[in-house]
Image (cartoon, rainbow, N blue to C red; front, side, top):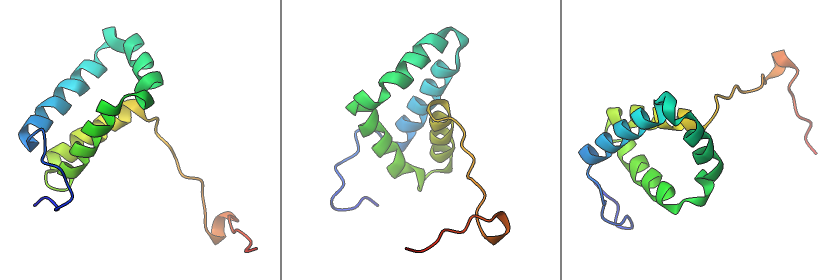
Length: 97
C-alpha cells in the first residue's frame, strides 16, 4: 500500500523486475566494461538513476525478487566493504568527550 506522500509509480513491480534484470545483464557483459567504468564515474550526475533507485527501493520490501535484483545492481556500482572490528575484544573503544 503506497503512502499518501508517495507519487504514483511510473513502473509496476513487474516492469521494475524486467528493467533490473536487463540492466544487470547489460552491465555484466564484458564488452561493456569500459562503459561501466564511465557510468560509475558519472552516476552521481544522473537524476534519472536516483528516481529509478527510489522507485525500486519502494518495491524491495514488497517483492524479494526485486530486493535481490536491486542488491545485484548495487554490487555492480559499489565495491564490497568490510566493517572494521569493534567492541571490547578488538580494542575498538571510543573515549567519550
